Image: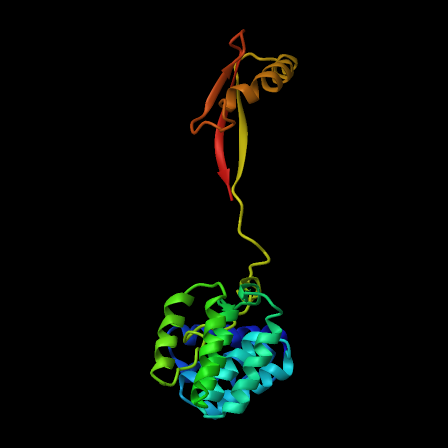
Length: 269
């Protein structure tokens, strides 16, 4: 399909997601015949919001197939695998997500159109959540303690709460991206969809019309005063200090009072 058509459907789907019209978003996304990893991520997020876990996993499988180094893709799929009680797959995704963090404490996906920062401690938290579901409490606690040493927003309270839950042998809920946080097409590409007026709009042109009323002025004298008065004084007389033309007509008189030059300001479209 044409790339511009993909951008249009993608943008319309995201707008539907913004108003929580999940079915409307899915309808637009299903019209895309040539998905990239980011549009497939939007599909997966829509299925998650609708509670369609198996379809969300299939969509995330396609996301990772298109970009096998996308840490946030593995992170999201690890959580969905836990929702489907596929714990071994979830743990594997946590390992891959941590690998593709590439020892960075945080990855900001804003440049790719996702307004989300993935922190290393969040990946570790999901790994601990898997171990809690496997009832491997000591392993879960050790991972949470390691996560507590990582930096990142919102870490302290959540890790402390999770450690208390592990001490009570309570299962941890997985972390997911916030609902509605999806990859968006670039604003520049969306702006290209707007219709353009290549002919432009009519411009206002300012002209000055010269009127001359003759009394006893000879043609030679008229030409002389045109050269002197008009060329040397016209710009100073017609325009003010800011370069703006006056709104009313301006009159100029030759010293012999034989002719009068009247300059009127007109607008022509």
